[in-house]
Amino acid sequence: MTDSPARTRTYQVRTFGCQMNVHDSERLSGLLEGAGYRAADDGDPADVVVFNTCAVRENADNKLYGNLGHLASVKAKRPGMQIAVGGCLAQKDRGEIVRRAPWVDVVFGTHNVGSLPTLLERARHYEQAQVEILDALEVFPSSLPAKRDSHYAGWVSISVGCNNTCTFCIVPSLRGKEADRRPGDVLAEVQMLVDDGVLEVTLLGQNVNSYGVQFGDRQAFGKLLRACGAIDGLERVRFTSPHPKDFTPDVIEAMAQTPNVCHQLHMPLQSGSDRVLKAMRRSYRSTRYLAILDEVRAAMPDAAITTDIIVGFPGETDEDFEQTLDVVRRSRFAGAFTFQYSPRPGTPAATLPDQVPPEVVAERFGRLTEIVTESALTENQRQVGRTVELLVSAGEGRKDNSSGRLTGRARDGRLVHFAPQPATATAAATAAAAGVSGSIRPGDVVTVTVTRAAPHHLVADEGVLTHRRTRAGDRSLEGTALITPGVGLGMPSVGRPARSPEPVTACG
Image (cartoon, rainbow, N blue to C red; front, side, top):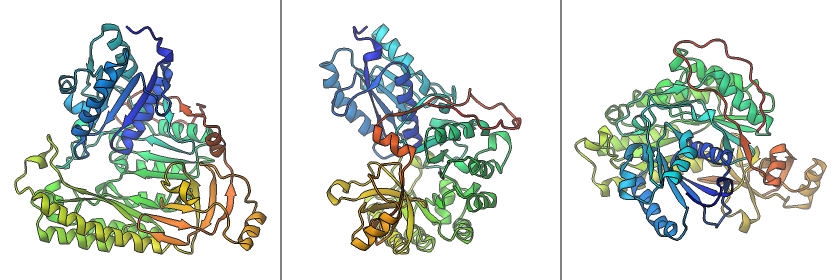
């Protein structure tokens, strides 16, 4: 036992992986805050360090054990310090983590995020490592409190788990089968965030557009998008990530017809070769993928479309790769996350024959990157001269301090670095007449004219045309954290649910 009361102990959560992990970390922070901990100040050592891990990214295990090795000497000098490991790698490795790093105090999995404070206390009491890994979801993470990273944009999970069997992916075995939240619980959480001044929400799921499979409604996701459109004060709705096999016309209609749903689509391609897609167990082919993009652009000509692509999947030939390049050229992506395939233990693809030599993978990756960069630049150049609305962001412009610019996200998700002050006296007079004055804070909304394009961002150097101050901006200036309670009491029942209740209002 330590002689320091729990309420004075500090914590730090280190996150690896996808948006789902980022949101889980918000829940972990909320749980620790509720248990009396406080976040460690930047640069100060924490009494509790929590690693929220990923098992998908390359060298995830090496990264974790490297970090744990560094902390071993730190912990040896700080009696009472605790280290916890959770997330996908913890779910996969289980007791192996404590065997390889015996100075770890707590290991917990993806299905029992809410157990962290109890496990920390138990480890202190018994002075022994606590390993608790469940094989099924205990409660929805969204029923837990959260300390939000942003005052103006929030993650809202609509489902957890995945029913797909992609041969390269280990997520279904670590996150389990898909489980959907009740629509009323989702809308209640969105309403709660809006009541606290949040302007933008992103709906999260491993396969977000299969939402409703658990309660038998194939059009549930489109209905959920339309329901978000009815929430007063919610200005932007995004979602990630959809699967092409579940992308239906009703979702495209909901995106096009619901004013606050952003015309942004992240649609993983993975490969443009039908033969490779079959080996990946991706249940669509390149013609269907391209047809979806055509349908999206017919309904929303301004849509910005991004993707994921894997290079060097086992058995990928030069011809397969050329087919991928062809689909990428025809897709006109505004951006892409590109990955060099590497085997993940526990996935079917890891044991497939004809693994592509690393030097071949690297050469193909370089060629793909060039074409993706060219496509992104071309699409971004179409934005030059346009007036765009930005939600001002925090921490996304790495050069803002040196350039004097601020950074925001356009409605289509593009990153825009902008000059807050007009470049000419005439522009300054126009801005003053439009009411532009005072400091611009993260969470405020501005309009600017795009003056230059680069592959990964836009620039607007002629100053701000309009500026709307928001409650989110006020909170950002105050620096007060947004902490929200959990929404929902657990898992949905089997079968079609009763009519969803009206969204409730709650304050964090």
